[in-house]
Image 1 (cartoon, rainbow, N blue to C red):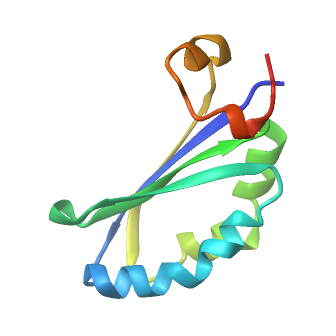
Image 2 (cartoon, helix red, strand yellow; image 1 turned 90 degrees about the horizontal axis):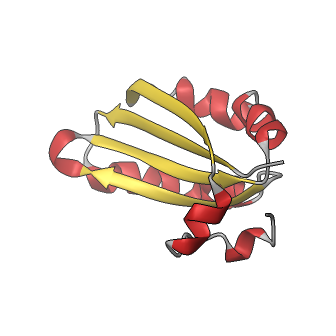
Image 3 (tube, rainbow, N blue to C red; image 1 turned 30 degrees about the vertical axis):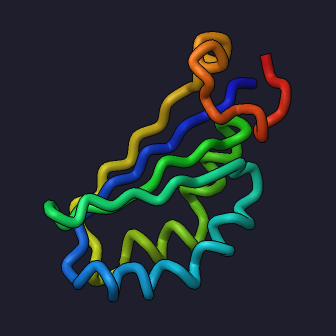
Length: 109
């Protein structure tokens, strides 16, 4: 099974400080998601856009995550809108050649 990348972007309608204060307590909830190997939090303050890039162990882990109460709470948050959610298979061999942060993800081929 191949690692999967989940790319999530959305608009936010609160000040950056309020956004960060709201999501910071959720970091551990995201860290505890089964099969999620890491998440990078994204911010484009100029365009009021934020999001994340996730590395998952496999497609099943992504599907379980997308159906979770954690994702439902994010999608229904009144300060967030215009979601874009895209899923990609990781091209492991080529990604390792360009130093992708896959070492923490194990020795998948």
